[in-house]
Length: 435
Image 1 (tube, rainbow, N blue to C red):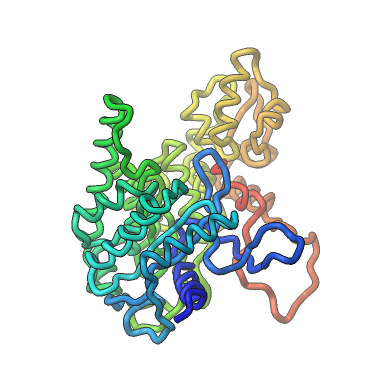
Image 2: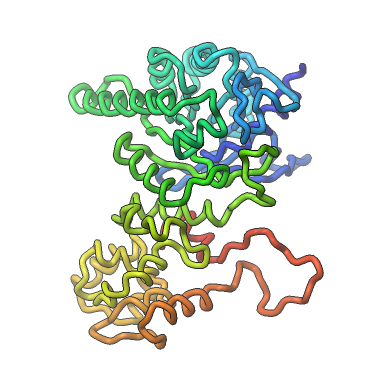
């Protein structure tokens, strides 16, 4: 099989992994032009300082011994199969890098023959890149659950970030849809990676030239909507993973209905809005001081699709509002809808000089059409809505119902667009985390 054909098959097979974001473009370069957005394997990710990084995103192979019913690469599925060699992946990466198409590699794999054999192939690949080609670009490697500890450690010494995909939120879900997998084989490498990261960081404090281990941290992925697990269970799991393994990110992937099976839900489209709500809640866990049990409870285990999680929490806890922006501490300000992490810190800095007025908040970056329902400024309440849950919720929904690019009036259509539509503020918040 030609290398180009392998690349097309295995880059397409990697598109369901959401640990980095694809541009979705298939624009090729033209004579006299600059750059290339060809669909075969190029995706975009972001560094901690906000830089956009182009990555070669591929599977090493889609030949899999497992038959997970939700997976397009499951053993029983009739799809084109391909297998790279370590040398081929390394060469592809270097050739793409030399042409300035990419800045790094995102490499995952189905489980070929057995976990150890697959992990050995992945380690050989990154070893060729680092030792022979002296490649110092970014490498994100997916660890194979069930692989031996020495292989996980060998990979961690060579790559920048590692991931171990949990995929399904509970042991019962694994038994239902992926009976050949078990929770222990997934959790064990996550624990090993976490402990080695901590160990090497402590060594760095003493010996500056000590080796590094997964310096960009580890992440994982959860599939949303393939099982009956509710949002509360998913969010509790994410919270536990952040605390237990100090993960950099938990990625949420709306289940794409690629197969029909009695154990799978009957979905027409992926639950993208639900995925979006989980990402917003994830920001609240990591940066806003919320806990999963504050955002949801056993009586309300699913997120409201009409309101973002922070606004929904505020509406349900009006007894804590309004708060005075000129006296509230950072933790309190972060719980006000429309006040993000940056704007809350700007409020604290600016009010050291003088008391803030309502107009000052807009200059600072506060979203006043949301925040005005929950704050006072110098003792004055600026909302024109009755201070009760129903009216505030309706006001938040009505003031945010215009989609990005949508006209004020739309012509009637016999074939309405049923695809999920996100608000302009929603699209901004998922990138910046300002809620």
